[in-house]
Every structure is written in C-alpha cells, then in structure tokens.
Length: 109
Image: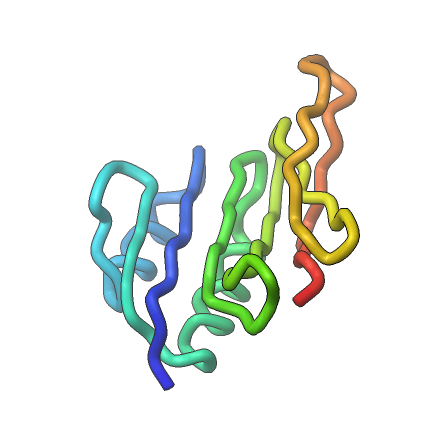
C-alpha cells in the first residue's frame, strides 16, 4: 500500500535529484516528498545510498512502531540516529574532520 515518504538530500549528484523527481516532488531544494509503494521506496533508497558520495541522505517513512515512522541514513552527517529503548533519538556528533561516515543505517522498527 502506498504511503507518504520523505527523502532529504544534501550535496548529492544532480542525476540523483532527477531520478528522485520522477517519483516524488522536490518541495524545497533537497527535500523530496511522495506517496509511493514499499518497493518503489526501497528502490529509490538503494539508488540514493549508492551515489550519495560526500553528501548525505535521510529517508523517513511510516513504520509499525511507537513513533509511527522509521529513519534510514547514508553519507556524512552530524546527526546520528540512535535506538533508545525502541525510540529513535538523534545524537549530535561534534564537528570536525573525524565525523563518521555511515553508509546505510536504518532505525529498528
């Protein structure tokens, strides 16, 4: 069943933005929103996480958990999703050259 999906990108190739805009709308630069099936959402995420490079991407979609949504992240970023007793919280990483690069992190449903 289709569900609303939000994909936020930072410093990604224009080709990815074009691919995402085929299935979603870019409401502001780098923020894509659409109502897509699970299969399409997963394929869009696979494409985004494969080419994120030095940029970053975050996917938010509905999930059957306490918060009602799940997060997937890829690339360089300061905000790191962390599971805390079944809730996804965001931990801030100190700025600097040693910021972690997480290729494909997914919160627990």
